[in-house]
Image (cartoon, rainbow over all chains, first blue to last red; front, side, top):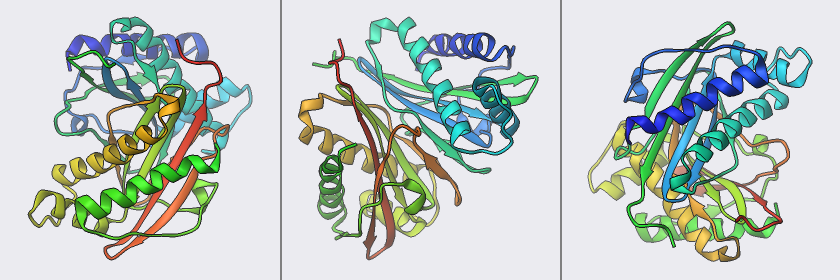
Length: 157
Length: 157
C-alpha cells in the first residue's frame, strides 16, 4: 500500500482519542511489517471494502483499553468485560469511519468490528499485502495502529 | 442475525473443504454465543459490508491449519508460517466469497482477510450483534465457523 494512505487513519486515531477520550497521543515511526511493531492485549479489527479493500487494526495495552472504556462509559472499569470489548470495537469503528471519509476516492464501506482478546495474539495480513503499522504512546500506555489496504484497479461493479 | 443466514456459510465451508482439500466435515449444533463454542489456534477473519454488515471467522486447530495448508500448497508444512497464514486467509476468503454470492440480496463485498495466531485468543463481536457459531469435526481435528451479520434497514447509498 502507498505509505500516504496511513495518514487518514493516524489523524482519525489521534482525533478520536483527543475528542472522545481527552487523551493526547504521541506517534512513533512507521513500520512496514507487523512483526516489528508488536500488538498489545486487545485489538479491534475492522474490514474495509470498495474500490480498495483492507483491514484496520487498533491494538491497545490492557491499561489503554480500560482507561479508554472507563472514559467512554463514564464509570471505572477494571476488567476486560463486554463493555470494554464494545468500547474497543467502537474506537476501531470511529477510526475506520473517519479515515474512509477522507479516502473517498475508494468509496469504501466498513464491516462490523471484531475484537481480539489474548495476551499473546498476533494479527497477520496476507503475504501480498504489506500493512503499515504505527506505534503510539499515551498517558495510559502503548497502542498500535496497523492498516493494510489494497487498491482494486478496476472499479467494483 | 437470522439463524438461516448461517446456512450459506456452512455450505461454503463444507464445499471448500470437500473440493479444495478433499476433506469431509461433520457439523455440530448451532451456538448463539461465541463463548460457548471456543476458538482454536489460528483464525481467519474477514469483513463483509453492503446492505448488511458482518464478520466471518473460521478458526482451526493447529493440526487442521497445517493439514489444510499442506494440501493447498502441495507440500508438507509443520509450522504456522506465512504460507499457513495465507492458506487460512484464503479459506476464509473462499467461504465469505461463496456465501456472499448466495446472500445476493445484501450486495456485500468482502474485506482483506486477517489471520489471528495465538493459542488462547478470543474473538468478540459487538454486544448488539449475536453471532452464530457452528463447530465442525474433520479427520484432521476441530474447526469452528462464527458469523455475525447485521442487516442495514436503509440501503447504503
